[in-house]
Amino acid sequence: MTGASVLSTLVTIAVCVTLLALLMVLLVAVYRFNLKRHPYTDCRRCRGSGERRSRLFAHSFGYCPDCAGTGHKLRAGVRLFNVR
Image 1 (spheres, rainbow, N blue to C red):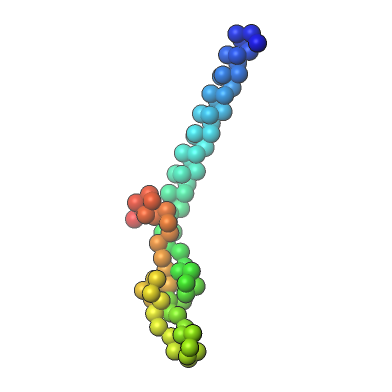
Image 2: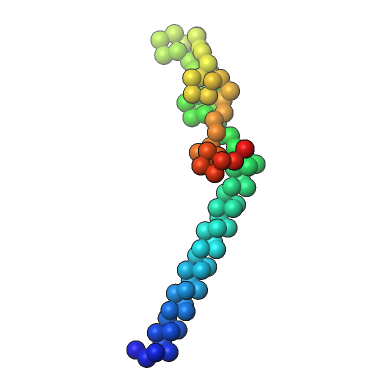
């Protein structure tokens, strides 16, 4: 390989790495903005209703212990990025 082709290859790699880094920064910024707009998700345990049915008595129910009866839980990224 000649010196020019090695330099050309290194420049191409540098441009690709830079574009990939910029894309990652953009994706993180969009995800953080989305977390700011929608910080809560439906509770998986009660499916967003806030109440849990008894397994033994079908007519009785209580509040969901995971979401404290609200039906919503914070998304994982809210804690990770400290978004409020």
